[in-house]
Image 1 (cartoon, rainbow, N blue to C red):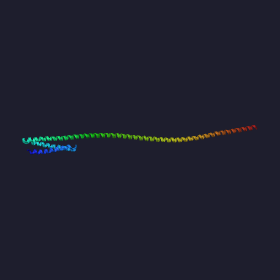
Image 2 (cartoon, rainbow, N blue to C red):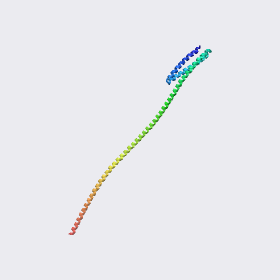
Image 3 (tube, rainbow, N blue to C red):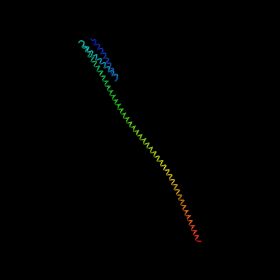
Image 4 (tube, helix red, strand yellow):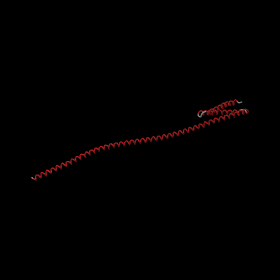
Length: 219
């Protein structure tokens, strides 16, 4: 028997058991950093197992033909076991890669959704800003219109005051005209009376003159 081969064999069996245990443990781990770390450890252990297989192969081929056949048969079993373990690790890595791809897709989708949300939010903000500007413009126009209306009302009030003042003045003129009419009417009546008085005086004087002439002529 080859003690060197048996030493490699014991080391490989320990690695094989360790690999099987780690594969089972990795399959139950949640996706993420822990599984990635476990896969890295599995790959490192597989490399160690590959090294041991090559050492056992070299050792078996260096033995006598009677022993070589026995050890090469064992080596084929270990190689088959190692290939099986490699397939399990590859399967775990593929599942983890698919999960990572799905997560990337989800993240990409989430990023796209977030980008769309930001774009919609930006568009909504722009529409809100435009609406705010329109409201401000409408308010400014309303204030200008209100100021113009107040100015017009003030002008109308001043014109009303002017018209009222003119009306008062015209009323005063009307009163003065009425007074003047009354004075003229009174003067006209007085003149009419004076005419009658003057006429009466003249008539009396004429009668007196006629009477005097008659008296003188008759005597």
